[in-house]
Image 1: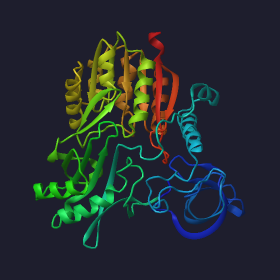
Image 2 (image 1 turned 90 degrees about the vertical axis):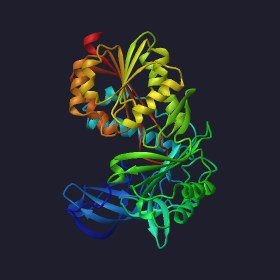
Image 3 (image 1 turned 180 degrees about the horizontal axis):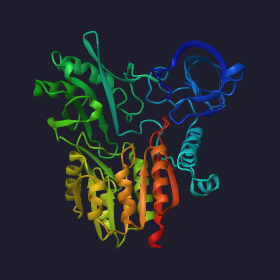
Image 4 (image 1 turned 30 degrees about the vertical axis):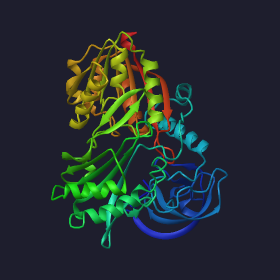
Length: 456
């Protein structure tokens, strides 16, 4: 919402604004106070609730303006000093200048607002369902995985992020999101990659770093277009810069964001990353999804099992990934079937079940198409991608009449949309929990328990 968009009138007028609230995607929200613009919303990148700022109007349309904070005139009482030296340019941690307690308060509000304004739930109903946003672990160094963009700067490669509100590349030498001892990994890898990929650097699109504070496993993943690679030389140079338990080359086709993986080559080490979650061992391939905040993920898994009480039940794990929920379900439930579309994740899931000596059926395929053949079931966990459930999946879930659903979401807007459809289709929302998996960002994870009215 805060990036420049075509079709809007571009301008660079500066104006003093008082910031009232916080937008879901980060950045403050103010209103014009004078003239014909009075009352019109202004989204101000880099501003926080309670700030009075000088803002530069970047663009305007009929509904709202977009602006950039150029100077804080009077800071909010909740404003704090940035911990990261790249905070003014890097867009990775837009809320790091907001006190942690306020981050948690606003994340709860993001979920509440989405449920009311998008889901159509009454304020009294939402207030009765919501609890405070759960925080666990450290606010820095909490990510077990960080991915960096790659750009050529002169005759060297640099790792970095996108800038605030745009796609402009910002080089990063230290990232405080990485666990202690690995903050300077971007700088170390950038130098090594510049040397190791002298002729082939143009093929490199992204670099992923995974670090487990529990197993001590470290993986470096080089996301590259297919092409020549001096494997042993690259492995030696990268290994000298950042010792790891796994170094892989992920071969991609087209844009990196599309994740069209043609194959994964192990250049050194195991060829996978190891993590421990709720005392289960997970072996994760570079393209596979896995929750990036292990301590909070552990709390979410425990809470989900507490809500579903799977002992003696037949449970479905839909959009299972590599098995964060499938493995504990397999130990407690009488029967478990999992569905996952991504090939690398379903392979990892089957391997993780075997490694842990657990039994569950893992199906590779689309949830909407497969669900009719998997019911009846007593309960299901639904953990879809950020885009939420497809219309076909919503229809299949409503038709399945599964008594209990635990919906895990990383986007309040798509969550609210899907909950409204499920409630209209005969479910009742029983509980809404929110979790701060991503401190310093506007992202918030939710766990919602739904009960079918038809099976009471």
